Length: 314
Image 1 (cartoon, helix red, strand yellow):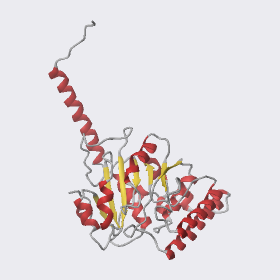
Image 2 (cartoon, one colour):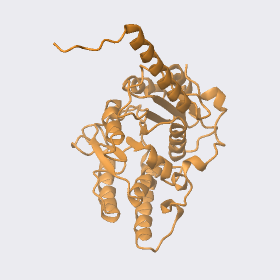
Image 3 (tube, rainbow, N blue to C red):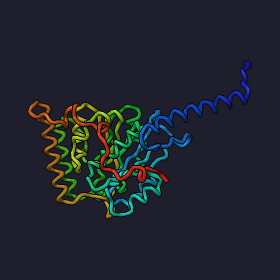
């Protein structure tokens, strides 16, 4: 038998404790670099490839579905943020009870502005991968691990949870007029954007920190077409886009835009796509597709309810 070098147990324990203290100190410094102190409890964080994972939830009157959504989030999520767009129900109170970091708008600004706040606060918290998940339980939180992994291991810069792959959208309750519009708009965009995605209209997305820091997101709409404008920017600036199949559920409590706003969104998608095509051939030069456009980290937050009262977990 070989002779093994035996180290005293007290020596090993002392070095292990020193390493733990050093790692905790490093994580604490990173988490407290923003105005809100985000705790990093060692032993509870299960990073993917050394990346900090954040889930952000843009909310408006999500009281009925928030708890079940949060209940299915995997333990590996380091930062859980809810941004409330001036709800009239108990969304904010419930979010605090569930231990989420809550940021509340001082009035209703719209879905696009809500996302801007989500991403700004996730970046400020030190997130490396940010997953946007609607708190209405229309998309399953169980795919967070898969989507985050694809970004954390640098396979893609953005990953979409597609309702179309697998052919389960209609079985999940998607209205037929929305399904037809989805297919038409997706084909139109694939043609002019020069890519081949199964859909552009899902609200379940994972992003890298680099992407969120570099896209001129403040040049986009405050309305629902923000989603589409963001993907057009991703294509324009050369970010890699991947997809995973995601089952969807349409039910009474799940948020969904009505027919009139759906039509407005559709025309917004067409306009965004044509702007992209004209920019590519040099006939249009807008800030939305310019590297000089306004970015998140350059903006000041002037539309929050007092941070000290909303950005704290229970």
